[in-house]
Length: 219
Image (cartoon, rainbow, N blue to C red):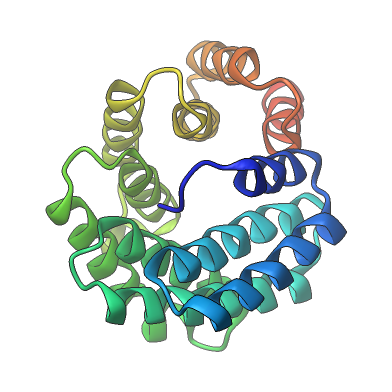
């Protein structure tokens, strides 16, 4: 994962606000850096910022932007994997971004489903304590139909692993929010409310979490 510096912090804050313009500006700078350096962390930074732009696009229900951001991130993550085949985070970002493309391209599940899963599982194999990889695997389990290997119960397990790995991190906050949504889908509203409360406690400013709370409390 790129170092947590001022640029990454600004990008995370832009993600929290759903600030598309801010993220696009930071992505442009990340591309310029990658062109100058050609380094692994430059390409993982592009992929990470693209992943966060996907979230901002989801906040605004902008499917066109979401698809563009995911494709941009996939290209950068593929470059990162080529530069460092043993980078757990590069594989995680590639798998997660491929998964984001699935609903937005023709025959997305057939084209990208198996490859997305393979990349995320490779990330876990390379680093069994990568919490981001567990969140990515959980969302894959959550959205994949059961007949194709999906499992909400396995999603719960993966999210709990992510939280246990780094309980107070940004990743744990993401995991609590997703766990709330999984519990809601299982009809476990009390657990869903508990998890979304924990997510908001860790980061009350994030639009993704606020929207998840509204969804949970409205049902």
